[in-house]
Amino acid sequence: MIMFETISENQTLEIGYQIGKKAEAGEIYCLIGDLGVGKTIFSKGFAKGLGIEEHVTSPTFTIVQEYEGKLPLYHFDMYRIEDSDELEMIGYEDYFFGCGVCLVEWANNVREVIPKEAKWIYIEKDLSKSFEYRKISIKESAK
Image (cartoon, rainbow, N blue to C red; front, side, top):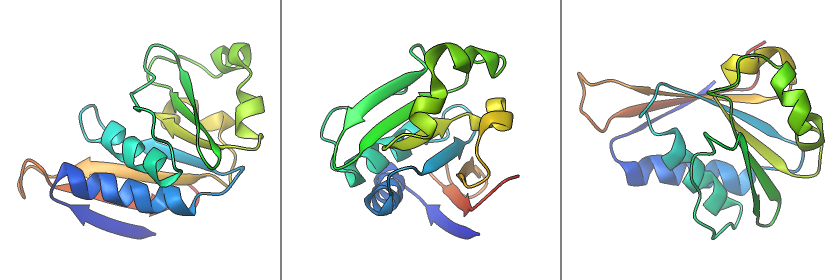
């Protein structure tokens, strides 16, 4: 496991950027954390690392947003997904096993469809340290 600590949005963005720069086609990154913890900030940095200049937002109401950079980025938000059957309707396997990189927020809601090779990124706050403090942990597999 790899762990980072950040104390500002810019530092969280930079961690996302560094990870996005190293991302390769076919990889899946699962992003886990409570509401307001900084998943979207991390995602913006990740996209920037892939050379994406388009404004990145949370895809909460669309399930998946597609962005073009040095590799396609498929940014999923599974917050409103109640079961993995809903993913069948959008053809998630084409994304998960395609030529791009998947960044999946709230992946724990659909854990059963996440390939075992996925990387799991956990973002946590610790208000006892500061309002801006984040701990970002990366695990190669959560299964």
